[in-house]
Image (cartoon, rainbow, N blue to C red; front, side, top):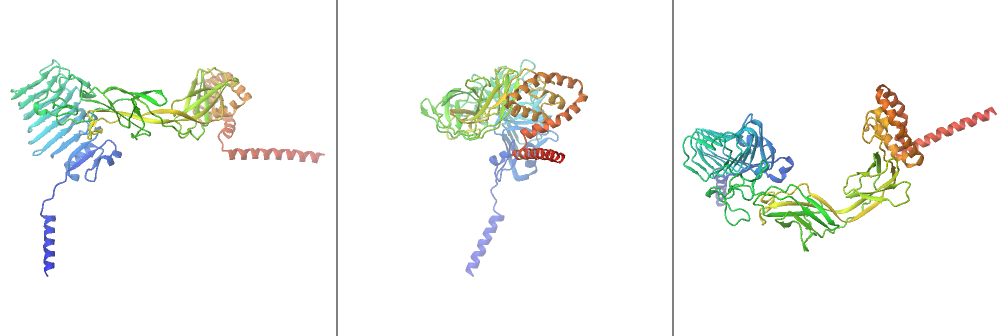
Length: 624
């Protein structure tokens, strides 16, 4: 009886916990990515993933999934302005990289509309493009915070419009090349601080019916047309603003980070102070990359080039990132694409596993690249040698493991050694130039393997345990990764020798690499299947013998004139195509047909010949 009572009490307590004790709310953050394949990397079971900003906002406002914030990864997202994306609940919407996360209005009206009676809305770290208005605030009675954004909507646009709204705080934004930055109608703008108003068209930067509480520490670089600020009474706090100075963007229009010497550096409001990476004292910059809400990812290095002084070293070079906060660069390397875990490089005599801290320089000599490749086991097959004026275009099949190919060539009549040229790439076509017209050349190809290292570089604000490429204090990798072939080349077996002769004659009509002028005219294309078959027959059969090469030379001399006449009388082309069909069929059998089919055909022809001879012999016997 006692145990039953204890069990009943336990059950009552359990039910009370399930139904009466409040549960801790779980924050749900929607993730928006530019490609659905990225969802697995950025979302979890409680963080739904979207590829549309519009869809994420729609679900959040409808209460789907309990979304209370939206995190947008770099990419360009078109946000429909009809119907508008209206925020009618409290929510935080932010990008992970301000200058790489674009909301495009598609030329419509307002990209985002805020209409929230009793909740806070935060919009930050986004770039607004291509709309008449970036953000419209209507009937909001609590607080709207618009921070660390870039508005580059176009010269006929207004970046932010507010009407009958509660305190709207607009801090650390960039307004670039807009007609008007802020337009307020019977509203209570709380604070406009630490913004950069640059090239804001011919209208006023700020137009307010009711005076904002504070307009402080902004840069107004809007020219001499009209006042920078227009409102009906004086702001209670109007100080620290700068007029008509170049903000010194890294690249106006594309990169709004600040260069060294910018007047916007360390001139923001005191409450904008933030301790930046590698800077000992707090500072407070104006603009989208200032204040505690700035994203901490520098722009990536735009390109990476190299030279190879020796077979074991390479000198890497890249353009400087002019963001004044960038402290240096990291060089990453590995032995396959995306594998940045190399270990054998040496810099200035010191082992340098990936990543290498290059410091604040824009070039680096990397040595110790001593990996050795294995020679390719496959053998290339030359598929065509197309004649050009003074050159031959040589094409061949791919060989697994080849990083480049050697092409050997010499004049057929020459008793000297073959000339060698390396293609430097894994492409399977190469043009041999500087050759003599109407002279036959012997050509063969070998596959070459070299050890390949893949390099990329990042820019960083600081290096510490919290430094993560593309996430915090370090940029994403330069793209694409730069492959560098080093070490002693390992050469495979040679292909069968093929022959070709450059020629200055141009096919009629003027179709590049036609190789069979009359057929090209008859079929109206150098890429017609029949023309390709005849071209292969020329390269693989006729060019292999002296009589065949003499026929080719004769044909090159006589056929252009015939092709020209054929083009002048197109009605004859169907007749010529019919006449060419047996020739094309024979060429196909000799060049393209499987070996078994060729053997069967020869056997059939032999049988026909034998039967014919046997019939003649029988007829002779009967007559005798």
